[in-house]
Image 1 (cartoon, one colour):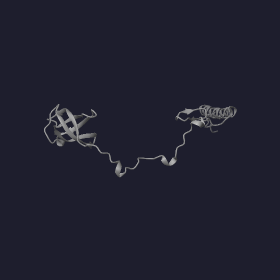
Image 2 (cartoon, rainbow, N blue to C red):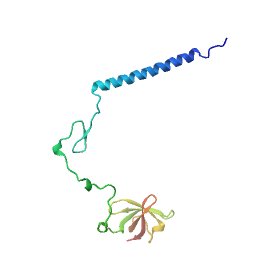
Image 3 (tube, rainbow, N blue to C red):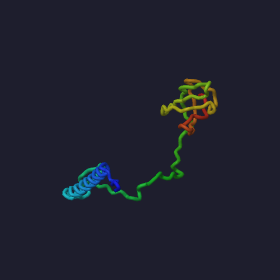
Image 4 (cartoon, helix red, strand yellow):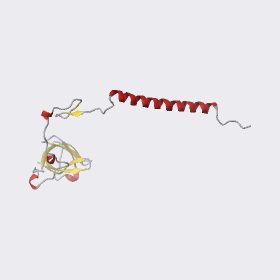
Length: 151
């Protein structure tokens, strides 16, 4: 006579799995019943006239009328008259320059920002604490000072 393939351990695992499935189903039904008792509706969040989230409806007297066509999506196009005019030549002071490595830093006198400069961007020889004029150019790691002249 053949032996049953069902072992005690397998049957116990199967019972535990069925028990977990039943418990899960009971919890699901309990949550549904609780939602119906509470009212079961969607909870609302309102935005007041200042843009803050509240649980009370906003005061309609403080409502601001906005024309939908006045809202610009994206970057506004520049027109001929909108050209920003500024002097590309800036003034600053050399804070550090290493002649052996061929690079240094210039501090802008207007906004006190540091800009990297390379020996290839120099017109005149410069040293630390020299006052210089320079132009800015976008580099791989930020803005670089180029066409550097000593004042």
